[in-house]
Image (cartoon, rainbow, N blue to C red; front, side, top):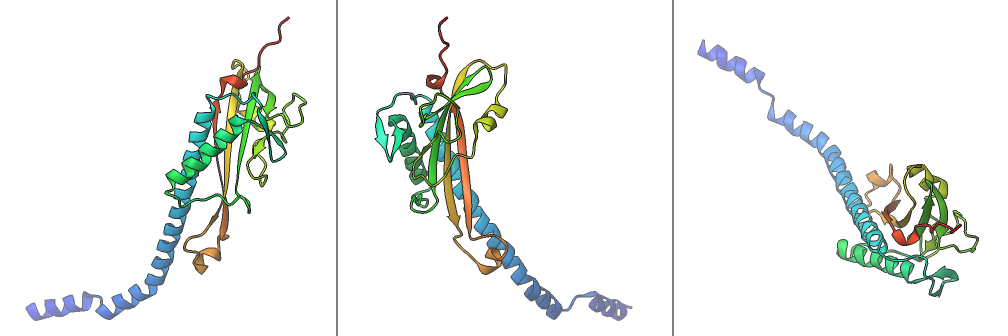
Length: 216
């Protein structure tokens, strides 16, 4: 009886060779999945660094005045508000990423900054007012490298507003960065383009941009 039970037990076991074959077949698939997770982990880490930089810059710019013009830069109406906010983005990216992220302004990377005056639940003006028409034009924004336009139109911002909210001001900071894959393995680039544009942004209230009622 003991011998029959032992024979049955041996028959129920999976041969070691079969396990090795199954492992050898699945190993490439597991390595491909693991490398994909690592690559997109890098991408997510870069994106979070950009979000933090945009948030820090918009928080900093929330206490400044976008309406004080003090000069011209690169053919655009510019002032210290936009320069300081831009420099805060660059500084925050460098510190937050440990120097791993560097915006390539000769390619497609850029920093776009806008300020909005909100009156009666709609956008009254957008700054910098490059054409000096005192209107909200989608072409009115500060671009660090002139590589990108703002992804937010006046209609987009208006759609986010509460029509019953009081008059206010908003500052919007957008960061564009072309992420080039670190691993760049062929089984990843076969399905995902090697260059992925990351767009991080942050909005904060800005009392200096709040519209002033016209006296009767």
